[in-house]
Image (cartoon, rainbow, N blue to C red; front, side):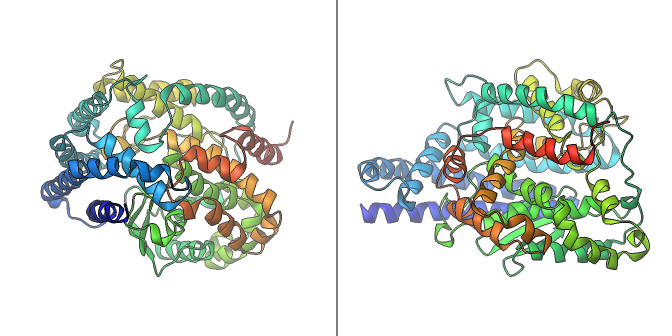
Length: 502
């Protein structure tokens, strides 16, 4: 059995390395690659994707899994080997359903679609990417068709990112969340908008970058194992245990955009950097789900990065970097500005109260497309209509509407957005558990010390990678299943203080 186990690990390490190479190609396309490289990049990614898929679906892998099934039953469930076998089996069972030629064609299509989206977004021209998106929808439906017995066509797509989640459960969760959020949003937005003019000045790019790097280093980002670059849409990617990349984008006339996107992506990076090193080369060397991953970016960005305690420490330093812009702005004014609530068009810039409404709109629209109830050509108008009805504002253009997010233009349609709201909910559930174990954390944050929180998260979430499912990680770390109660308590407490009753 040891020999068979080692053979399976050797085979999987090759798959792991190929996917790491694909990540390098994708990162390069999103950062430095010239536009004329698109066609070749699509071919390269298609080739590697095809090879990785063939290696995973090799009948020899299936035979090894079958031979090791008895061995798996006799080893501890929480051992690395048991986790390895569970996840490889799950990946294998799913992969053998999807033809290698389909995977190769889709990788090539995605590379072309991404470049079309970049140009369409710059030109505010949805028509330029519309035919690509129609093809993406065809691919998405085709992918789902390979999985028999699903309740909803989106379920196989959701399962890719949030294993075990189904559209029916998410719809129920989102209905309850929306029921509690909308009255809170209505109440807060009935107040005059908070003055955030202090954020809307000229903040030179290099100084923003310098301060942002200082902050994320303090949070625990290891620059010996990572780096930050610029990209049209901020993201995090990992090539190896010792190579985790994040990106940001700079708006010289808006201070918060780069700063909070950097903290957000650092949250993702801390998760990947915190996975046990001996899991590298296995499918366990990744975060367990999109929702749990997003919980870390939102925890560090919002619960920590937008807290009063955080800025008690960092604001005097920020004032030193931008004395003419912020020298006469008090900490209270700055804190209220970075937590301003308003009806807005851009998801990534949305405040904590309205953010999930943006996600729910996207989730509903992608379900409608998959169900055949919404044609791609009608998507821009449907987008505007939902924003008007749900958020009370509609975009006059597509650049700030249906073209704002990269997701549908770099992957399948379906299963991409629910993780953001799951992450918001889980961020508070995990943080609440951390405070119960380490009540000194809030005081430490005011002193610029984040090690206790980081270590608790690393010990309870990060180090395990994907050895446990999201459901298991939540139960192990918090002692309960997913619940929106800590999240809603957090929002009511924070915004109740910022917007006390009239």
